Length: 114
Image 1: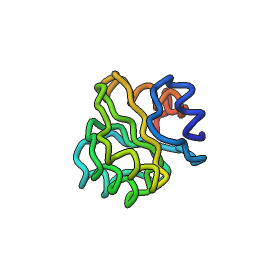
Image 2: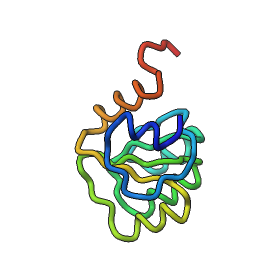
Image 3: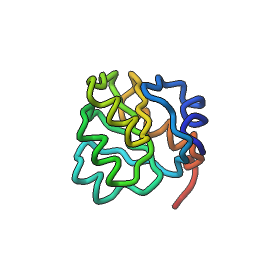
């Protein structure tokens, strides 16, 4: 599923230009070393870590979009960093659990056993 299509389903706020990239999985974590070691390629990161380092980690991990939860604001230097790396930043007031469920449903993971 393309980033824009996923976000249209979710109805969250897109903070950056939306690259035409696929999202095939999701990863929820606030520990950036955990993200680097475990997030799958072509995924969306669900987090409250709203800073430029999140984009650097996302780029290293092959993540195509970051969803900032709990209405976290992206600082001024985060948005150009994301656009430079072609990573979408999306914002929502929902918490990480709620976003994880919504993304899983949008990607068709609800009801799967593996």
